Image 1 (cartoon, one colour):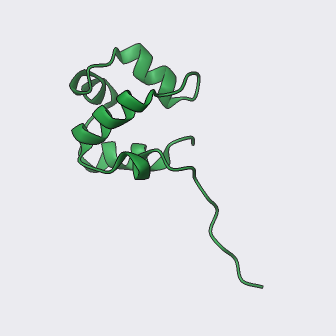
Image 2 (cartoon, one colour; image 1 turned 120 degrees about the vertical axis):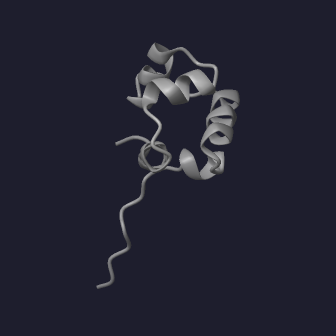
Length: 71
C-alpha cells in the first residue's frame, strides 16, 4: 500500500474516496489514480487533502517503513 496513513485517516473519518476527492476539489478518477500510485499527488493536492482530513500532510503521505527489529 502506497499511502497507508492516508487510507487509515479516510477510514477513521469514515469518508469514502469519492467524498475526499470532492471535498479536496479533485476529480474522483484523478484521486483514485494517485491513491493507487499511477500518478503523484501534487503538493497543493496533498495540502487540500490534509485539510479535509485534519491530519498533517507530511504524516498522511509519509513513506511506509517496516518496524525496527532488534537482533
